[in-house]
Length: 115
Image (cartoon, rainbow, N blue to C red; front, side, top):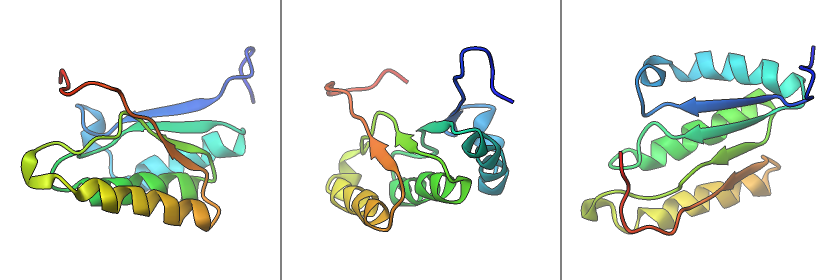
């Protein structure tokens, strides 16, 4: 059933409490319901530091297995030890798009975050 405004979406904050306690499979099951209603998924990923590649893979997997468009919001790589990993994360997104996954990213133009 659709709501009156016809808007359906799933926003995840897997980096933040309590979202960080949700496992990937749990989020995928919710995404499947939203996807079946024609909705979308927007995610603040689980990690933007040392595990960023795994977080991008997880976010893509949620969209792919949930059968819904997915947006990685505020894409960034935090910490000088991780500089250069955006080459890999952007490649992961491009590979997913090449196989038909509707995944996109956005990025803010700031040099620091406020979390």
